[in-house]
Image 1: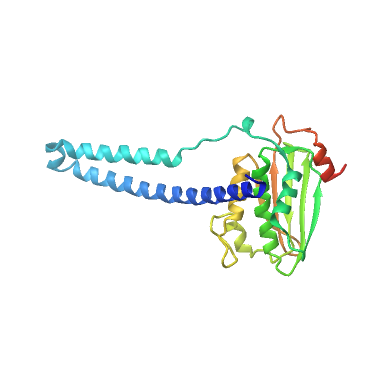
Image 2: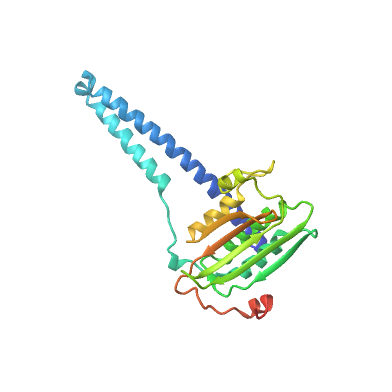
Length: 249
């Protein structure tokens, strides 16, 4: 599978994950309603002659309870990846790849500031998908052109780690939109699925990071992501290819 095909496959998988998560949430709510209704009917039936005269009545309520519990277990089951098993990649490499894949139009100027030497706990394809979602959003917010800035840097204070930031000078968001920006299927642009920022948030949180959204002083939208250090992430040297891409910053 080629690089572009692999990224597209991961993008489809990420969208499917958002849809599945939304369906799981909806189904859990419906199962809770069924459980409450079943409990109410059981309490009513316990006061009737049918409860004591027909053993099947209680058996059926027990069956309902077991099946609901089994369904809820399926909906909440996860197979999390331990942080020690997660691969590491350099943020600048993934950012550069995302910019190439996004095919930024000529009327959008790109400013790169890749200073991070540390690594983040994602494989390069997942981080490229994350960055691609941010770059696509930024480009779409600047239909008449503008400046797209992508930064990565090492964080020394606190828990340390690596931070990434994507900035645009586009239309920005209305104040009330910030609280909903990461919701699945929420978009302020007609015809858009509204999944990009939700995919970003899922990938970041799943790998122990934090993501924040704010507006620039002169408009536009800024998205900042931080991945704290894990023991083997710090001090990793860059490869020869990475040195060629980034220079000796």
